[in-house]
Length: 135
Image (cartoon, rainbow, N blue to C red; front, side):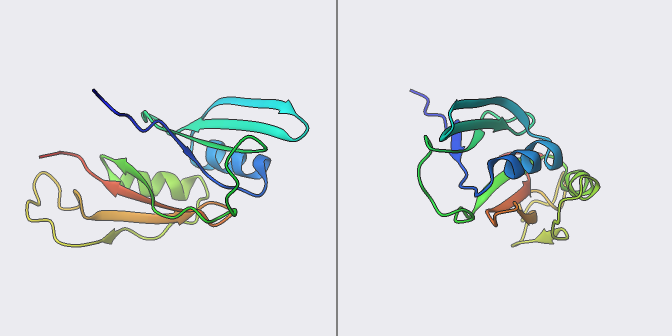
């Protein structure tokens, strides 16, 4: 049996501001923006090519302090290109960092050890890791 992680709830203080950040700045697709009532709204967004989405909202999502989610991680095949895209979209992102040692620097020395880091407007922390080849 396969077990797939398909949704992660991201706690935010302002749904519209967060939706703009994830959709416009990060380029996530807006799967749906559902207004159930004045007190309940759910927005689901998916990173390009991902099988896992994020959900932001109010009312029907678990109560967590905005900005309390740490360690979310996206994986890309080309970190330099991803970094340039984030910068071009106006995201405050770290420079490329090498974390650890890649014992197999082929096909690319950043594979598995290259990262950039950013935060959403509420302070939720994200990492982007390069993996262009596995195993």
